[in-house]
Image (cartoon, rainbow, N blue to C red; front, side):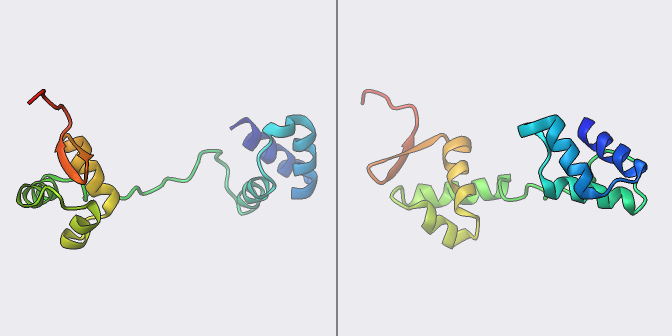
Length: 124
């Protein structure tokens, strides 16, 4: 935030983006924002932006790891304990990384010898 304020200050002084970057590199050294970031913020201030905050981002809603998909994976696993995460992905359309998280985090499974088994093993 401090560096953004300094970029805005240099802009208000009438410096160029390159002069601003050079000055900031001298002051901040390795901790300086990248050249691209300095130029990007400089352009924002040139376009009339006044605030220093990041733009709001719309995050992708988490829909893959829901109860419906957990149940689908669970049913497939009950019918075939040797099924792979890749095959479950093909059968359900759920990304493999999400399938793996469902298996390990939601269903508490761990792959041993090509089978998904309960993570807490007993002596039996």
